[in-house]
Image (tube, rainbow, N blue to C red; front, top):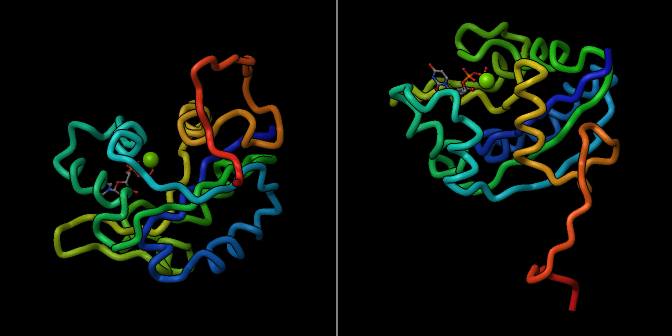
Length: 167
Ligand code: UDP
Ligand code: MG
């Protein structure tokens, strides 16, 4: 069954120059990249992304982590991979949430660490189930940024809407 999955290369992954390594590892899956961009993450976006963890004691720290506050890299790379069993294939490659428990050859096992403050800096986010992937992809991307029609979209006319064009 074809599935979409949201991947984020988190600020520690970017700071450690791991973009190429991570994308190379993910290419082993033979999945298709159907969306990709660099994003500056607002507090609102980070909080919304991690909303399922808002009652955890580490919530504030992981919001800061995703915003790049811990790494002097205020950006993440967001991608959507698409294809057969995409979620399991990418989760398997990523490895366990705790980088100390992740298989040593997995992406998190290879490149992750636990900070002295206790945050799992695990370089990559991967949606963990289909409903979560849908929620996250709709949060991070507009329909016209994804090159396949993943979910129902509607055409909207923006009256007072201003955007940038190249000068
Ligand atoms: N996290 C953490 N400590 C924990 C659990 C999670 O620092 O005890 C961080 C970690 O960076 C993780 C993110 O919060 O990737 C989201 O947690 P989740 O349980 O969704 O794990 P994931 O789906 O990323 O494996
Ligand atoms: Mg998760």
